[in-house]
Length: 129
Image (tube, rainbow, N blue to C red; front, side, top):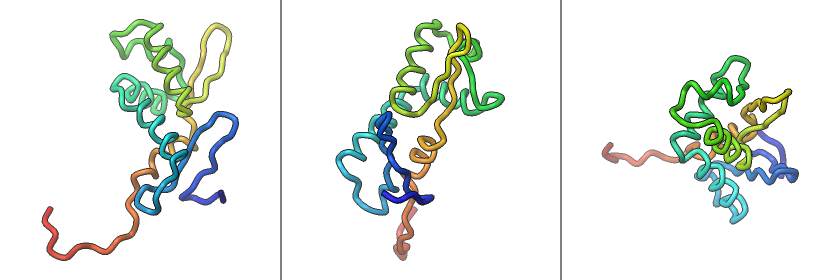
């Protein structure tokens, strides 16, 4: 696969599967599995909110201690949700002392953002909204 703005190269180290926009060309079974893994991870409201909190946190990184006040969930539950996001390839994690800090993976954010990008297609005349 070539590197281009519309396509990212899957990382063999962690299995992150990126794909071209769905409307551009049919995706492979492997690409569908990778995209489904990321989509399943963010399909949970708590995980989607966690991802948003990490992305919007000062410096673009946050630890569990920063995220706890936003939820009526226990620290182990928050940690579990962050692990799911990490395992799906959406977050990096880095241990500092007793805390683990999370940061969104730019290549995963790009893959999610471009997955549903519309391909240039002719507009159907008279199509109702």
